[in-house]
Structures are given as C-alpha cells and as structure tokens.
Image 1: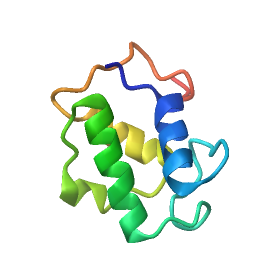
Image 2 (image 1 turned 30 degrees about the vertical axis):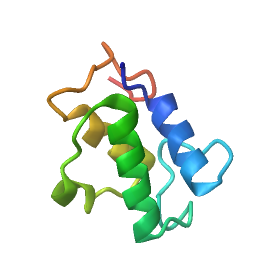
Image 3 (image 1 turned 180 degrees about the vertical axis):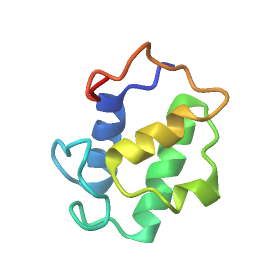
Length: 88
C-alpha cells in the first residue's frame, strides 16, 4: 500500500483522538502523545502498510512528518513519486 502523508496524519489523529493534525505538529508537545501512544502509532502504521519501522530511529521522531519520513525508509514501503507537502 502506498504511504502518503495525509494517511499518516489521519492515523496519528485517530490514535491520539485529535482531529486533522498538521504534518509539522509535534507529537508530544502539540498533540499530547505519550510514549505508549507513540508505540501504538508505530504499530498501527506497520500493520496498515506492511512495513517495519526501526524502533531506535522511532525514538528520535518529533513531528508527524518525521514519522512519515521514517515509514518511507522501510525497505518494503511503497513510496509516492513526490511529497506534495514538502517544498522541493
């Protein structure tokens, strides 16, 4: 399944009970995520997209976009041709 930033945003919002988080929202500071929430988000993304997210790298994730970028680094990730939310 193709990983898209909007899907990651929606998944983060569903797990955290937040409506429409922004790509650059900080998971802990802006969205109120706790460590168990971050784990739930990572597991949800892994199951949804069939990817394996590096646990050590996941500890350095700060924003929703960071999480998206990390998911794209999985060798099994289906990547979009370009990130529409990121300037070239």
